[in-house]
Image (cartoon, rainbow, N blue to C red; front, top):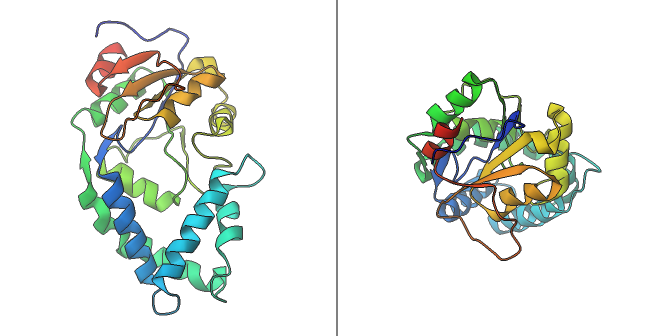
Length: 236
């Protein structure tokens, strides 16, 4: 691929899983649920925790900017079996510090991830990590470390704490553009799934990176570009 990016592009938004790393998503989610529910098994049944996490995730998916994702999640999740947020959250904090790192085995580095991020910074683009903001900042920063791209001064990393919507809701992309003070037309969304490519519907340009998670459906906007991280790096 020898094309160059549109000169209007001033910001590059990168998805994480499947884009900057190779994630075994099904195994990761299954083991994440098993591990986090085990952390509170001494006071709440793991089955109840998993059911409540899934229900809270649905509430976050429906958030359309009215509140932060963490507030939407907390409103749906707490109290759980009579246990308050103040009682459970310190246990979850300890889980993210001590147990979450063990899930790294389900994520592998992509050889060109670090070099493409480095080149984007070198060329002066605003660089955003636009990963699905359903996990706390600590978990997302750990996953960035797993991908060997955790030490860059990103313009924004979307997390459950700082986001007010999630993919594929277009509000998620609109709020990113507002936060970084760039028009959608000045942004390139790089990702491997339909929920990344929908950013085209607000005017963003898109770059499809094919991964195991890629499922193309007929309603997906045609990507502006397709290729690998190496192709993107050459275009920068």
